[in-house]
Structures are given as structure tokens and as C-alpha cells.
Image 1 (cartoon, rainbow, N blue to C red):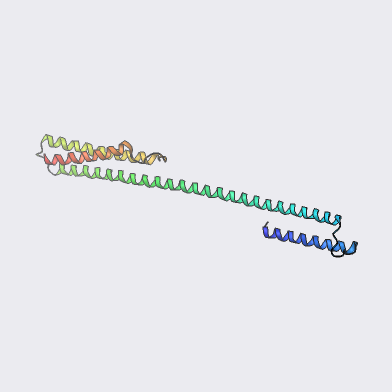
Image 2 (image 1 turned 180 degrees about the horizontal axis):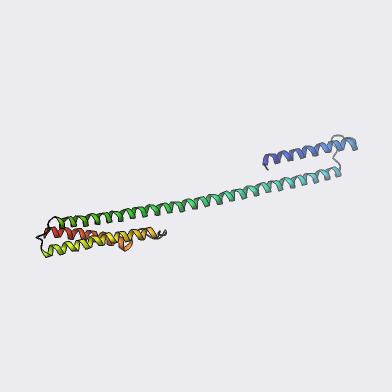
Length: 197
């Protein structure tokens, strides 16, 4: 119910009451001369009608205000729920991006370990026929370290892929991700040292 239509209804009731008073006054009693007070009965009836109309108007206004208040509370609750969903979606997107970055880093480490191992195999195939035992031992250690880096990178990728971290956990490959980096560095260093021996 619109407040404007409520006021129109009240105006119509007041006009109807005035018309009824005039009609009732013209039909039953002669018109009172100006300056004389209205009778007590007419005043009581008019007061009762006005009191009823006032109560109706107050009740209608209270109902309209209560309805508006309930609607505003509902809209506020919906906005809060949408804000909470947006925050959760943002957190999920940030986690997904962090996981993608970490997986990319681990794939890069795995690729570098694979390329380093293939390069060291090519070095062996290319001409270490007259190499000393120390050179071959250091090169074999480099192979083991590079293969360990490759395996650690794959294990770290698998752990990130199978368990999505919660909000409080840091997204990384854990111990295997750190081990993959250090094994790669050590394997490449061992391969380089074997070339110098």
C-alpha cells in the first residue's frame, strides 16, 4: 500500500464524514445560526469518528513503516550474503592463481633437470672415453642428483594437485619443491665440475 493512496483514502473519509454531517444536520434539525456552539452529541460523534480515523491512519502508517523496515533488513541481509560470496570467490581465485604459479615453477624445475640430464648423457656419449674415474664418478653423481631433482619436482606437483590448501596454508611444493631446486643446482654443478676434471 502506497502512503499517497493512504492519504487519499483518509481525505475521502473526512470528506464523506463532512458530507454526512451536513446531510444529517439538514434533514433532522434546522440549521444552527452562526455563532451558536454545536450540540454535545454532534461533537461526541465527530470526536469518535476522528479518533477512529486517527487510529486507522496510525495503524496503516505503522504497518507501512514495519513493512519497509522488514524489506530494508532483507535487502541488507542479501547484500551481506553477496559480499560474503564475492570475498569467498576472490579467495578461491587467489588460491587457484597461487597453485598455478607454483605448478609452473615446479614444471620449470622438472624441465631444467631433464634438459641437464640429457645434456650430461650427450657429454658421456660424445667423448669421455679417456676420462678418469673421478670424472666419471662426479658425472654419475650429477646424473643421480638431476634425476632426484626431476623426481622431487614430480612428487611436489602431485601433492599440490591432489590437496588444495586451505586459506591459512601457504601454497608451495613443500619439502619436495625445495629439494627439487637444490638437487637441480647440485646436479648441474656436478656435471660442470666433471667437464673440468
